[in-house]
Amino acid sequence: MRNQVLALLTGLCLLSSPAMAVLISTGEDEVIDGIPFRDDDVLSLDPSPGSAELWLDGAALFPDDAILNQNLDALTFLPNGNIVFSTASSTVIGGLAVRDGDLVELDLETGVATIFLLEGSVGGEPVDVDAVHLKADGHLLLSFQKDEVILGVPVWDGDVIDYDMETGTFSIFLPQEIFDIDSDVNGLALLPNGNVAITTTEDTSIDGFFVEKSEIAEYDPETGVAGIFLTFEQRVGGADVDAIAFQRPVCDDGFDNDGDGFVDTDDSGCSGQEDDSERDASVACDDGLDNDGDGRVDYSPEIGVGDPGCVLPAAPSESPECQDGIDNQGDGTIDYDGGLSVLGEGSPDLRKPDPACTLPWRESEMADACGLGFELTFVLLPLLWRRRAVAR
Image 1 (cartoon, rainbow, N blue to C red):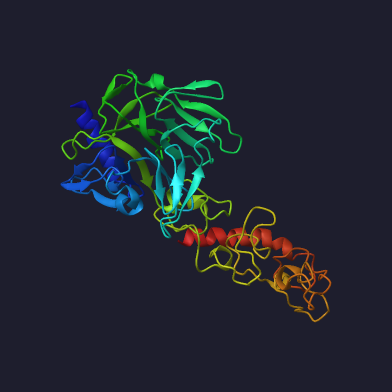
Image 2 (cartoon, rainbow, N blue to C red):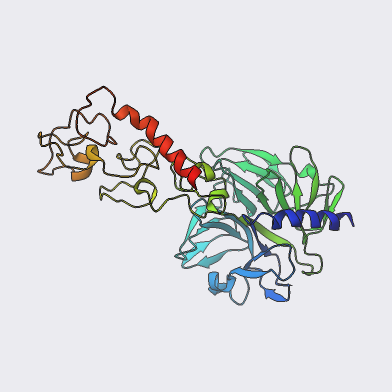
């Protein structure tokens, strides 16, 4: 009864947040809400009976395994909208040979699969990834199908590690000791509130709270309190939930999806949490296009990346006078760099840089009369950006 009450409460919370859809894959072929699914399928559902629907067709993804049924056993999203997953056994995806310990990136628009993380990359060991989640800091949360020893450290199949792909180092994020009995973490994902959604390969108990293998538990790492995030009750048979992920709108996923240094609703391209793009198609420096044909796109906080004419994502043009390749004043000088960034090296139209163009995003090649010119850019553009965000 306690599980049912908590399931109802957490279910209502889920329904009140349209920013989240639950994606799952099961460990065996299963019938959910009267619809048959294979263990290589990914389905979308919410607590409402009858909501289950096919999200990713495993038969199309694994045509070579159409008879044997490949089992998809780990799943997460990338900031670019692609998914990363792992399979329970070796297979071939679109001509790409994949081992059971590899993490595969799949472009959902093109169907192209590439290796995201090789099987032997984690501490040099051929570990079999059983659960994965990409954190906002770029680290991976990983759990493995069996006990492993990585960099000399024992890692149990019930542990969740925080793995830094850049340094190759890791730490224990969740220890197996949170379970009252020996349990294998089968699927995991971070929730917006910082809690962890967990599934296991068998019925288990988390700090005295009973969880069935077909249920998704919610665990608070700070308090150690566990509850039921999603229960199927009579909607599903005995198959375990083998992989979980949450499909959230781009403006509520915790990532800087367009690489401009701003995240979610702090990004001027987001009209709200339910907006599925951090870009603004009406603003040249935030529309994802090379509007001035100089090979650079939009604003970027990284030096040498992005269009030099964009001081902020809200800047209205990629080609202000100081970065348009034109001698606007007819004085024989062009832009902040002599026109190099626009015209290209070796162009016969290159000139000396315009002395008035102290920065590439200046709107005029004219010299300032009062000592106030480009400096105002740093004041006015952020105000313009804030005004646009408030207006939405």
